[in-house]
Structures are given as C-alpha cells and as structure tokens.
Length: 166
Image 1 (cartoon, rainbow, N blue to C red):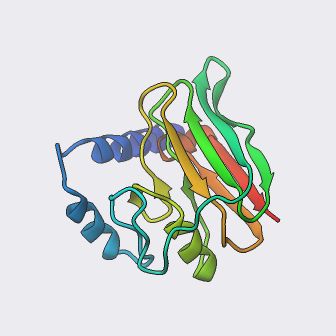
Image 2 (image 1 turned 30 degrees about the horizontal axis):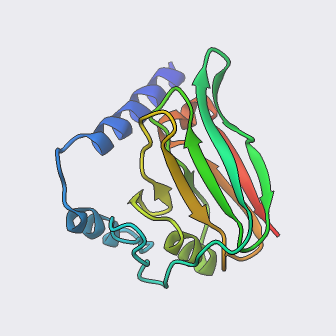
C-alpha cells in the first residue's frame, strides 16, 4: 500500500509539472524564488541569484535515463567526475525523467544550482519526455564531494544515483 501512495504522489508531481499550459519564465522563476534556495530563471543559461553559470572545461560524461522491463535506472548510476567536467543526462526510454539533486546545502547548492539550466524546482532539472532529449549539468566550480540525485517521477521506483566530484 505504501508503494501505491508513493506512486500516486510521484504521478501528481509529474502531472503538476506538465499541467498548466504555457507558463512564462517569470512565473517559474517567481515560484522558485519563494523557496529556501535560489534557482535560475527558466531562460537557458541564466545564472542563479548566487552566481553565474560556469562553463564545462573538462570532459562531458553521458548518463542514460532508462525505464524498461528491468526497471527504472540511471546508467551508470554512480559516476565520478572532476571539477570542470559536465554530465549529459540522456532520456532513452520510460520517460518522463529528470535529475534532481537532494541534501545539497550552502555554497555547493549555490554553485550547482547556477550550473543547472531550466530548473522546474531548486536543484531539479527540467523533465525530458522524448527519446534522445538531453539535459547537461556543469560541475565547474562545484566543491568536491558526493552529490546524490534521483528522477523525481521515478524516485519511488529507486531511480537514484550519485556524482562524486573530485
């Protein structure tokens, strides 16, 4: 029964994110401003209140977002990158998917948020609904450490992962 409750909650999040027709970027930014962490506006490449987006200066790694008969998952689920690297999240199947970082605070949250374009909530990237859609996050300027993430619509199905920044 608990699983059904989580699945219903996840569905409500997805429908809430997808519903409402065409909202302009200012509506999205205003909603994010009300939360504890500042997020960038929906304008691509716009910096967060805490700083400007940092360009990828190293390698761009690919993490696939998959939902199939084997379950929902990130491939690879755990990845190690260097400061300056980026991760390109690619929607392969079973969408919609997104990447949402959690338990990130302070300067790390500010830097990571600034490097995440088109957020649907603080530290939560936009939903990818079509195969081969991509969402890229820069880890330039992000402090070393481990950053846990999930797919908001499929978190209850254990679609989770982590990035270790060296």
